Length: 637
Image (cartoon, rainbow, N blue to C red):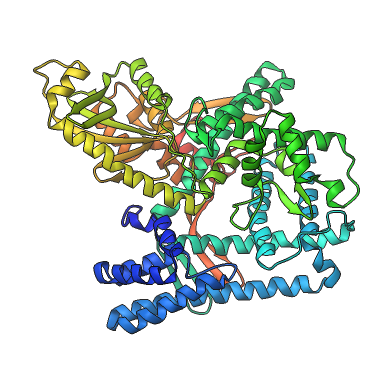
């Protein structure tokens, strides 16, 4: 169901139509209604974001109300019932958001006017205190997964909380105001409330871009119907995180085995560059975003990390005021800081604007500078342990920056894999008058030809980013199909450039699009198989998925023996079996199952991860052992 209607994911087009004015948007919707019908109109209304807003934006709501009034007049019968169903769903979302906001307001209004005035700084101080306590917990193995979950939850919530403060016009002031510990205890309740707000927002995002059933009985039930889209997003994220953590565990394992733990910090520092190449799909990071090289963007963020670590190590923090507890500088001071480290004034202005938190930011990892009075602060306990590449990638994606990097490095890696494994391959090129036909690389297996298009993409993370990424993949299938169509009609060119014998009989042609970002579900659209570089390179290298563990100071890596596609020589059957069901995705699906989340105001039926993928010093429980033995039978102790 992922590509049932790829246009669902083309939300930038709908948002751009909206930016042209409400009158223009009305005309656009009228045209769609006439040409494509009511279902398409409803899809656009949902994806454009005008129907539901967590913050109650009156501007978009006015457009929605005018549009609904018009649609109720010009539709009838079953089409009008579809519009009324949409209205009912919107009312349900708005009712739940309103009830939730009432609960939250009732709690914080009890704090009194004076404390309410300083909710923003109180929350930021409570968050920094909380993250600092997590960092100082030296039991890094026993509660590894729990700490990661707490950390991620706090960060994910904070963006929502700060945007809530901005929308409700809370004062971002009091940088020199001293607060008491008990005030921070009360303010930390924002994290509790935002856990629910994140859930509501997530369901709204799935409702906007896919299919969610809303059942209004004794309790509102939200059921994510499009499991393909949901699992794609969740498994893509999980696989990417696991790859990064796998690299980290390999580094830790090497150090443990060599008994030189003092090298851990240096080793992990070196991984930053590898993580960056992974996120941006670029081996050199020489590409530019807003006229600044990626290497310099990463340096700009790493400077904040180093500054945060120095601040934590040298500062005794027992004074709960922003200026004393967090890193706090004026814009002029930040400018001097960056100029001392090799940045021009022009580069600083761009970086500063990108790093400053606002109502459109994803979270404070993306945009770590928070404006309080004339100060721009960062939370050192957060930034000291952040991932520059992930933060920058998310920042760029949210701004819809041009990230279509296509250097030779990606294609060279694919070709190198073919060469090492003795697979016949070559790029294909032909110019016919003013038209060029160029295939990144084609390879031959038995008597079949595979056309490959290499596309470097930044790893998506949010539901919205995944929707946009899937739309890009869908659009890019046209290019490889155009190339395949031309060369399949000119087999002599293929034989010549692949150095095949003249009497070689080509039996079948196949198209593959390889992306640097992680795929979370088997993708086949417009006759094109879509696979990620990580899975494809492992298949070519005949390297099956592995389990890595660090237990009692011992590092182990075990490879699954359960997938025949990795055994023996590569055949056409094995290639197609792999593309139709990549083992990495098949395995990861086993870690998820349909679950029901019960809340006071609603329940959610959706896929959730029910097994851990990272084990550090932990015993396997029965469920873990059952699942692990499914793929590593006889290998788990």
